[in-house]
Length: 246
Image (cartoon, rainbow, N blue to C red; front, side):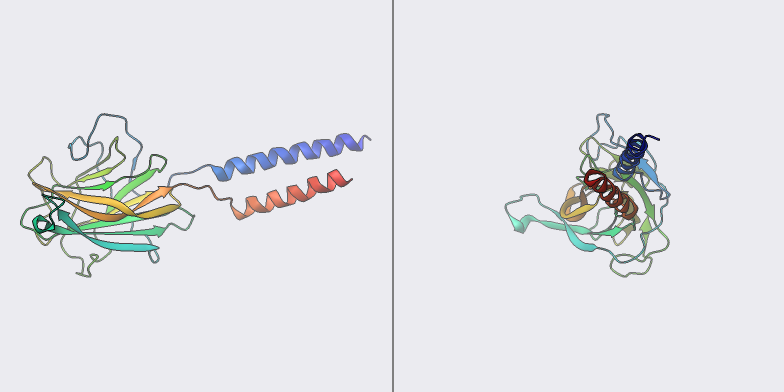
């Protein structure tokens, strides 16, 4: 019996198994929350253009405690260099959670504190390598400021535009906003394949003017080997090491 041929066959099969393992943990399967999948669109759209692509669907709220959260004022700045002209339109809350598999899930909510109603909410900018699965939650979680279930308004439309911003619409056309003074948006949920986040994103609302505030956003996707795959690589390395010594 040719032992070197047998050992060579075993080595070849082991290398194939290692390659398959690497391919498995480097791939990404989109999250399976009950929501609408938004791929990267290539159609000519601009933020707040009301050129919407899909209707959002209900989604469950993330479990556990957030990795980070923040509340930011939404500020309209007629003259960015003169703070005396600035006006507060409302607040935007954002938080990031782990989905339990190494990926991150983001939640957002806005509150209107000025006389005009909000037409839309824009979340920007999501990196092109980050996949997004979006939805809203309006019945299980209190508002970010602890006002019970408050008065939460469902989004009617949502899109991810060519600038990689996510636009949530609360009106059929500009000027007919439906988040009134003292009201909140539903919880806007964005499930991602991101493994890193930043606190320097921008969230904006639109009525007759635009207010801006800081939000948490995803920033990067890093593939991390699963424990079983790491174990297979360690065993394979030890085996090949023994083969060389033999």
